[in-house]
Image 1: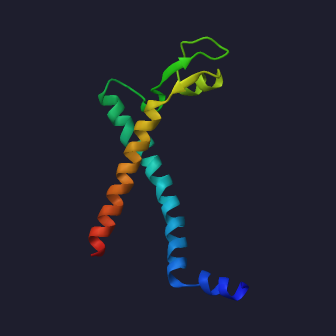
Image 2: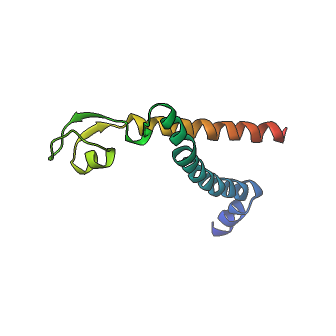
Image 3: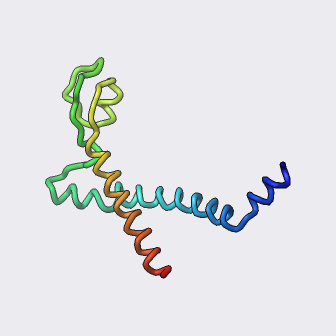
Length: 109
């Protein structure tokens, strides 16, 4: 059984998939930084100095009463929030990754 597993693990497709997963994780980190640190700050500046990562709606105040200046202080207070700014960042990250995969697929054909 161990021999069969070794043969399975050493197949070309399995190794390629493992490398792809590792590179994909690293690429995801780069894209997250690109969105949070490069793309969103100028967009926020154009929209009047909005920091998308701090856009939220408080559903229930925490142990310390609001208003809360940032998402971090809101979470430290134990408030219940909908963090729609973080969601917007995640959607933009997804679109960048999807576009990169589309480009890689287009060049591969």
